[in-house]
Image 1: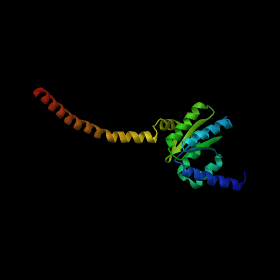
Image 2 (image 1 turned 120 degrees about the horizontal axis):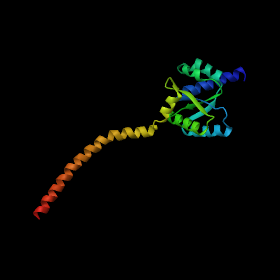
Image 3 (image 1 turned 120 degrees about the vertical axis):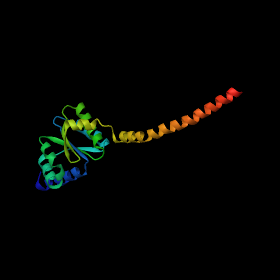
Image 4 (image 1 turned 135 degrees about the vertical axis):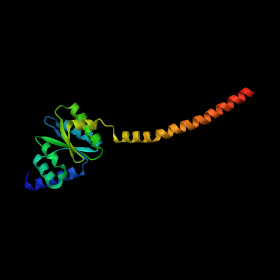
Length: 173
């Protein structure tokens, strides 16, 4: 690759790093083209993408344009690919780790989220979190539950009053 090609690749990588909410580094050695294509399709559903990168060019892009990801440079060793998560980073992490279980040649090594280098153990913990929609539903449910309880108590008072009046009416008849 000539110098102009490397400069263009560096700007593309910098744009992807800046646009992504999370970055997951993985070794892909031994995967077939079909397996990589399957991974890309699965990640597209999670609003993420997988790209094989050139380590030196990626390190230069991080140094020059994305200084907040400087800790990620340590993880860029050997033949690796990067999962760029643009939406829900937990969903992209979950997808990558599920693919790792199915394909032993794909090994997630580390990642970068919210300015911090993340280990594989941390990525597994993030993947175990429920999705954003489920968390939102749980929050709404916890906000609504006290009101439902109060409504049940208030309905119980009027229901008991009606039952007492019916019992008095039945007793007098």
